[in-house]
Length: 340
Image (tube, rainbow, N blue to C red; front, side, top):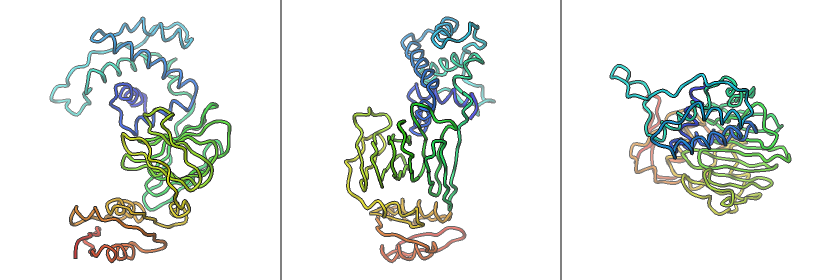
């Protein structure tokens, strides 16, 4: 991600227009280094000040001097100015147009922070972001810098910084993964699109898709809370307990589960527990890297409970259709499920 993309990400975050996944990405960046947190706090102050002073543009030189003093930077005049934002002419309709006054002011504040090459080192220290993806149909193991092990399920992605912070360890997950976290005095955080999971040393699985996060604990203890909620709202999970955190909601109360069964994908199993057919199809598409469609959207309300291991996609679809009294056909490269 280049400098401009990083700047716009922070702008969306403080203007309240960031997606859940983008908020999770910012949280992981904040936790990656003390310098990042320092810049975040200073920028938040500038953003709040700029918002209170609408509609007057902030005094760039004064704000820069104040920020440089707080961060103990050498005296240097800003090399960039805040430019007036205009609607692009028809020939430039492909360019991005800022969506709100709040967004414009957030961008202005970010540009203020980025107007010196010195400050660039605070935003982007020599600590590159690592991105590891497991493509559809594959699993992938990831060794984190602190010795923790992560196993990614099909169609999943994990992001982390090459050097984890001295105060905390943090990663961002999209998809499904199993964690074996190395015990350490530093807390370990997993940020998803809707939730944050905090641990010290434990083994657990996370499913984070479709703006929902589900956590299953195999060993130890974890705390699960909505990403935007205060820590006091977290629920604590122990071995063989699970909870789910929906979009814009708090986690459900912990419930007893068979963790080994729910984490069966680690052994090549596909496990469904009262799972809606549309979610079943999405998982089968990731595991088998195939296309599956429903002839009638109403069919997605059906649910499936069961597990499959070492089965072909044709065998799995046959079992599902027998259970639900449905049928499937194959048209070109797509399997189509329909009523009989």
